[in-house]
Length: 327
Image (tube, rainbow, N blue to C red):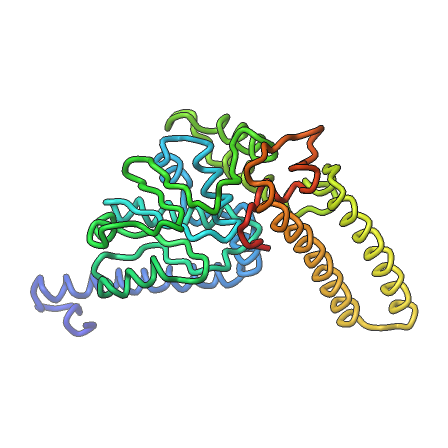
């Protein structure tokens, strides 16, 4: 290229190639400089990408497809949290992909543990394989697909939550009869979401994100979340267990430090403590599951933020019904 673009009568073609080579060299230098800057920023970028408020996709397509209905957004969030099978479909592949990805992001700081397919094209697999995946899958899933695939199947799974993103219609699964947008704590989530939606002009993505994050954290926060404000007997017993566990953990940690154990041992103790707290929260959910079946027909009432269902239930029953606990 240097000879073709060099001086002397090579003609206009050689000069053009020489200029192109020079531009390519400058571009290569700029790309290498950008790569060096990115490499220097790896810790900051890693922190950003792992932050609960980092959104790789916008939330507006999901909320707009649901016609800005806060109760429908809350329902899909609860369905994903309680390990339901969730199927979203649209004629527009971009809408389907964006909605599924947005719903997954709203679970933060949790990570979705089921089968996640952000977009399933109609022609990707044989029709029978698609039917087996959507109808017979025994694990929770969050899948978005083309409406064409649903039309070819001729039906939607009865046990799944199915959202038609083109019409804004949500088919609620039989296992989610416990959901009520008018009862706390879901009511507080719907109220906060409604203040951020309504139409494209009123929509505030940060507000929707914060509302869902606050709700998920309150579910998991054993110190000052829903569990802490409940007056149900089962939740009171769980709080006493937590207090004993933390007293024991603090005592063991202080003894280990006095013995000169290293950071790795202390980190192992911290992980064991968190796992134990998670087990206590799972027990709270088990109590909710046991009583939800008996009290499904009874009206859910709230007394000062406490959850009661026939005097047997706890706050988690209002969220979980007979679904398996996500945490």
